[in-house]
Length: 472
Image 1 (cartoon, helix red, strand yellow):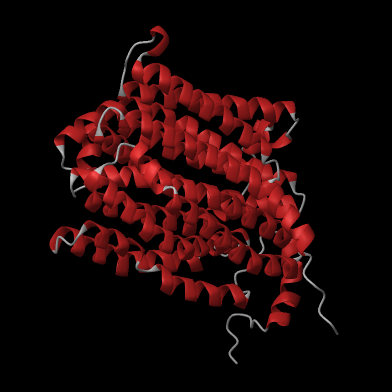
Image 2 (tube, rainbow, N blue to C red):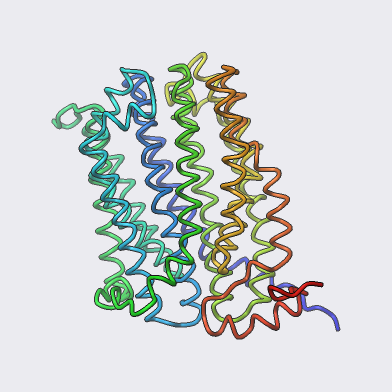
């Protein structure tokens, strides 16, 4: 019997509906960050480096709460496919509650212990002083940013991607306008420098939350406003949620700690390298922002079909999403390489810092192809219910390969900065091969809904996947 052709037209249309608004939102946010860096760059390289290191503290917070986002999106997408409203509400309540605990911890550290935070990330006293001044204010934005992320994750998983986009646009415009007013003291406003940049971030985060909430209410989106339903967890609900989330939480937390170690090493290089790294992180955010549209699409398009019991469709979609992702990322990296000179110069990188920043872009453009494919595959596995395989690989290779190589080269051998930076991606080729094998095996499809479980035996039999405990 002839195998039916893959429905590329409808697949690409569904992909675009989800991926394009998400990518646009993240690209706008990253563009806003680039403008921030340009504005702060006029104050000097140390200011760029300090704000960049504060952003790495924010990245650690991201790693701590993203495990709950990833676990939440697993449940959101599958319950959405199964049309289980109670399941969606319950999952959102648990996700938001766990995320706000993280927000409280990091907000407290930023407000009451900014000296400790900056001493962890760099040993340069002038950069520490600037970072402390910035962090004491910007920490107030953390709970708002996490709240907006929780709402956006739910909206995207239920295919309401335009509302987070509009919230992101409003936040970027607010941030850029207030930066212009408060950093330089335009139109009679006080000239606050780096403090003005921090205030602008807090205000734009509040605008993002407000716009998302108002638009969701206007659209009569039922899940965000069903507050009582968010906390009807019932017996065993939190346990089932945490069982699925736990591997993702461990992954993101341990990877976040690993990245902090890497940033500690990079933060003890020259001032020029620290400034170049801060600028590079902005460009990295551009690539990740573009990619995250595909990542969200993978989670929704695959997870929704798994939840509905259409396991063959989920499997075929997953295979194609990975290669579409690599193709698009290659295009973005190429564009960045071609326009690197005016961009790096506009962000106040010159001479040695420019050479380092340019080299980092070349290294990352090669590494990003494999890195983003690995990320896309892992998100696909998670949305289908397998939160363990990619987690084990990422943590194992980071702590067994990447961290020893980076620490030894940067802190012991004192290798050239670009060598140290390249070793941050030493594990990606090996993980790519192993992730591909797992992708084609189909073992990552593990439904959490009744419809998905009912179709699982037939799918496994078709793929030759033997139940646990049975040997060939």
